[in-house]
Image (tube, rainbow, N blue to C red; front, side, top):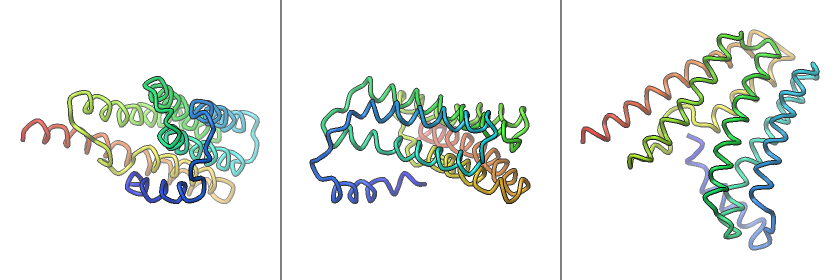
Length: 191
């Protein structure tokens, strides 16, 4: 769903930065990973969940920026795409673990969340290798999942019940997303 806003966001960035971007997109990806590690570190150290939410939002912002910088600066590489996807999966695991450490998700639910998140990513990658584009298919693509996790952490200081409701809704919607993607692939092969 947020994928549809990508073009508009990139046009705004073009107006702000123009041709003045000289950052290494892989360095941005690795900085995003470092911030994801800091989300889990904040949970391990029992730091305020609002801090973890802010760190998660910063990490996600950098994750959205690395691909744009690569395209805009002409530094698109296959390794960069691979690194970005790999860091995304590691970050997903770190963010989900942080929700568990803060007491938002029980261990079994955190495991289910992680498995479903990986399936959302895997179904897209596998479908694309078979010639079917799943971009924009499903309720909870990565951007939506990151925003839901951020919201869960942000609400945690005020209400554990609300934080859990957001996280468990995310779990259910991520399962639906997997089913939506499998269904889209089945339709793609039957037509």
